[in-house]
Image (cartoon, rainbow, N blue to C red; front, side, top):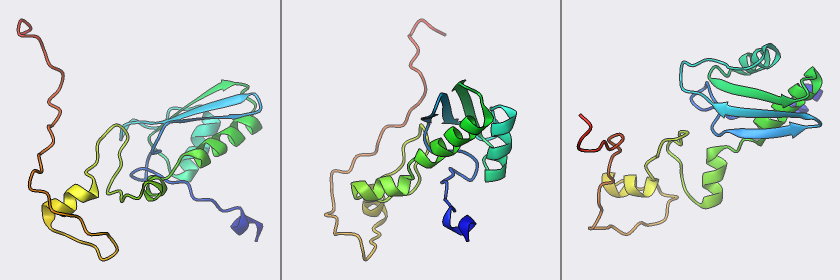
Length: 149
């Protein structure tokens, strides 16, 4: 029964990483957690690596600053993972719906998608059609000077 009462859900981005970078401090141990690109693996010490692999993370970077006592580090890690906000909760607080929120990438707002495809969910409010919808510019990479060939 105690295990069921203490059960927590830790949101994972694409089942392998965290959504947002975070820092958490417990006593003298500070743990920095950040998402890594897919396929980069776990970058952490052995104790943290074992815990993250049991949780199901495969692409996360972790740095321990300060005391490296195992108990403090584990409590700081769990506190840091629990402090990462879920994008669905953030969207609900802002009154929006999230299709996909990737670290460092832009997502398509649902309003634009609904206008584009002509879809409407019964729970969504009416969206007035806009005739002056403009396509967003895409990032084409760094702009090089004309003399750089």
